[in-house]
Image (cartoon, rainbow, N blue to C red):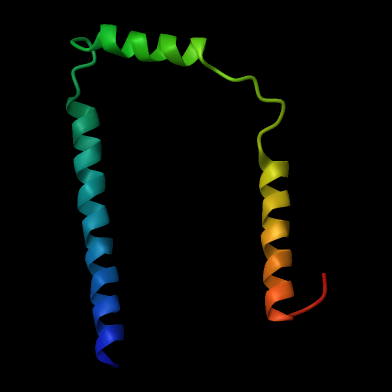
Length: 84
């Protein structure tokens, strides 16, 4: 294995270990968060979200699939792989 592949492998393994620790830290912070002390702030955030919501007529799945098809089409045109 060449040096670059070793570095990449070490980097990926490092982030995998870090992800576990970061998730533990996140859960701990949420568990220890004093919701009663911050109730007014939480209420303001929720109120803002309600007042500034945008009505959606769809889930966005159709738009997402349309975007994926466009990206796929562009890729196929550039590479000459397959037919559209």
